[in-house]
Length: 373
Image 1: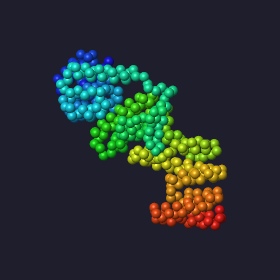
Image 2: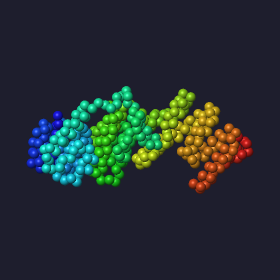
Image 3: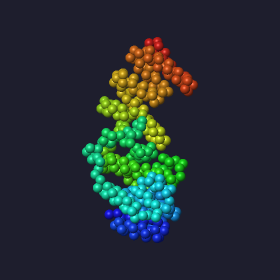
Image 4: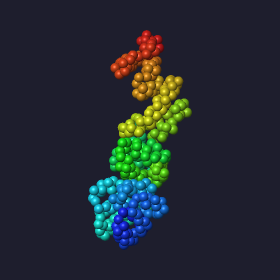
């Protein structure tokens, strides 16, 4: 059954809507002349639909819809207004309908049909995926992408994708609504940004429905918390990796390092992702150093050389790594490669930062040239 609340600053409009809804067996559980009176009562009544006049005094019907759905995400919103100008904004808020006054009985009947279909769908819908068949993989390195049941998720807008990415960064941790607004809509009008956020949140929740049970976005105390059931995240596997390397875990370390295909959400260019990207990059370099030491100690020359080159990609001005590489080449009898590495490094330093290789690096070159290594 549809249990509705009505908000309109015109008493006659409220009474007329109440009578018309009664004709369709809609139970009206509350009528309000403004947003504050409705919000004061919101947690004391049970309702699944809200008919809101857009032109409410003070807090508009559009903003009121955001506040209602923050508290009760499953409530269906129907806007009423004497103006056509708000149609786009109304549907951006994922409202189920938009009624122009004066509201005709035939038009209201279509709205009721939509409400009944939607509410029955929400109640009876079978999960698209079961926990047994669900396969949810989230890639955060290089780009942000989600594959569910072997199908790549397509995003309605780039901003919806960014909201999901931000919540994924804070998986299972509450994020205040204002932090989301500050980070994703910096410099924007707060009220407008809040509406945009709510629109994105609605689509995120719809996306989660397709991921199967246990995948939810909850809201409490002005904070959103994303929960993902049995999801596999490349970044989570990487973060769990120990920085120590031994014969007991070297194979696991090598496999997990393959997940690092680029910096954290590098291709998305999210400003808020930079601190996390720096943190993970530092961890990667630390692990690579331990791995290089392990390869050297166990005389795994090829892997040792490859690992040092990997480190050099992240720190191209490291004389310590260049020196180790030169010696590694020399020990393999590859003196020409060691000398070429030095020459390229010397050129890079001069052209890019205007300095020369240090004393230890130059002396290493001389020893290699003289066949002393």
